[in-house]
Image 1 (cartoon, rainbow, N blue to C red):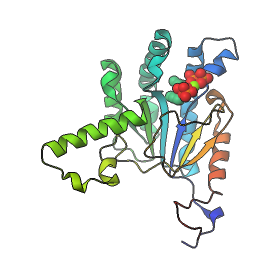
Image 2: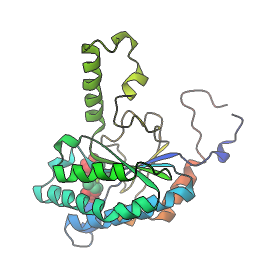
Image 3: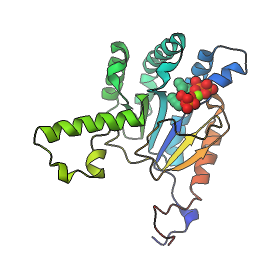
Image 4: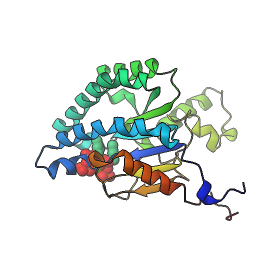
Length: 241
Ligand code: IPE
Ligand code: IPE
Ligand code: MG
């Protein structure tokens, strides 16, 4: 609305594909899990940086529906890490005013992990400073399929008119129904692909691919990437105005 592109505010919702933990560990001659632990330690710094940068929503990709293809040792190590991480960060997150949510299919996760996830969502549900969403056993296609299944049940029960179904209807059945679409999606580690992350929601997101491996991604680099976003011109299919 008459605003110059260089005056664009910070992205309200930033989503991050935290990639490169394995290579970070390999470069140090360590097992992949060593990289995952280093990666987990990075998360707090990035969450803490959000309020000052004007980022209200942060969504992070922690485990994809395809990551089960990894070795049993890596998968179970990651699940242990998630449990330990959620327990150790609870107090910090509550005190920092972070509201935590999880997206993804919980059915395939172990009960003890799901209980911790439920508990953290409940304990932080009054917080509003930063909205942190963790994508755990998340896949964009799986999410759309699960949403379609729930929507179909409503149609079959006669509660939803199939002729009335449009994009907004479907979006209400996605795991992200309470979240705005991401303005900016960042992927670390030099890979330029989406890997099934927020397929529906990122239709008009800006993308930024950085070479840094996730365990090395600092608050300073995060701030730089966000600064770069503010210079971009988003047109949403219209003519520049
Ligand atoms: C991202 O790091 C973390 C998860 C997928 C759980 P990777 O484990 O994919 O690290 P690289 O890509 O092998 O270096
Ligand atoms: C995407 O990274 C998933 C997460 C960061 C959790 P991957 O490392 O699994 O993606 P690909 O296999 O390189 O596409
Ligand atoms: Mg990877």
